[in-house]
Amino acid sequence: MIQDDTGALWIGTYGGGLDRLDLKTQTFTHYRHTTGEANSLSNDLIEGLLLDRDGTLWISTDGGLDHFDPRSGRFKSYKHDPNDPQSISNDEVLEARRDTEAGCGPSTGAAASTAWTRRPASSVTTSTSQATR
Image (cartoon, rainbow, N blue to C red; front, side, top):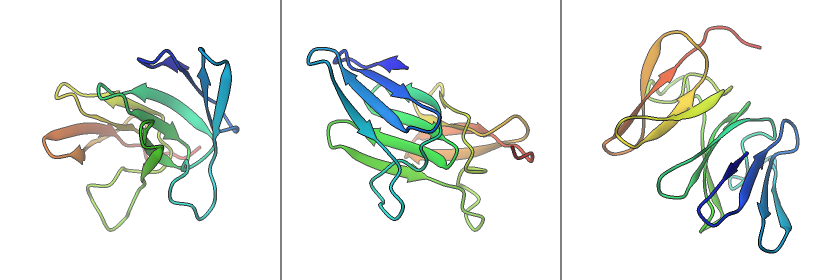
């Protein structure tokens, strides 16, 4: 659970997706994975949340890394692509981490490191894992 600059609480659940509690109005907004819909969570199993400096939210899931912009309501998903060496190493993302260059990216386990780029000039180191759960 994290709190953003507006005072809203973001709650990641393990099976129920992502919830936002507006403390001013005491209302919940629920975000869930919808098969076939690009603008939804990658997976409802949330491993972690990270609030970026620009107010966007990074959501670590068992189905990839999601980047959510609360202003637009849009999700961008990052998934492993075996044909792209710059993609994340696997889709079970344990947490997102902020690097020293103010970028954010995934951690998928503990082994070798690979580069991952979210946007120009923001490179992030990711941990990869050969093991599966």
